Length: 111
Length: 115
Image (cartoon, rainbow over all chains, first blue to last red; front, side, top):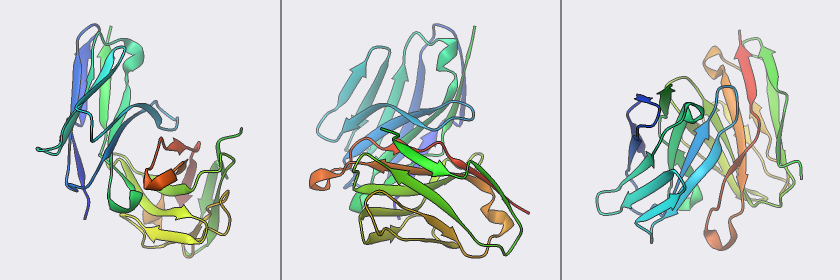
């Protein structure tokens, strides 16, 4: 079945450094790849997404890159701040429209 | 707009009991789904629906039933609760015009404890 693998499971960076989270997907028909941020006790919130006809997308300090050939996409956060600390999830839209999520990355930004 | 709402916020059940988790959205979204979230396992898709009268299984459907009689509501039923169903449950919805699933909005979640 469809699968999304996410790495690393935990990531600790110093404030101001960059953070990179990587995901791979199995369904070659996937064409939509969102990233969600979830703070403790809260619901997941969309932070950025990318479609298969685009290789890169930026929104201020966050960017996402997509390599369809390798079935791989990544989230890049630059100039990290303590408020970026949260769990981040990648996802891929599989056949039939269902959204499959990765296992999550717990990002800790140390002041 | 209330967005996606879920009730109850928290529920304790005994093994074998049944219950229904409610989910409603007021955004006229065709696509709705249920996820469960367990530590270290991310968000796993239980069931989803692409429109009223249409439902399909996700990654972990066993032990759960759904129905979609209206666009607004997508209840999740546990027929005989088991301790393995202790989890946080999230409902989500999105527009899916032309078969393209757009931004998915999540409800606040229901925390379920099965003893």
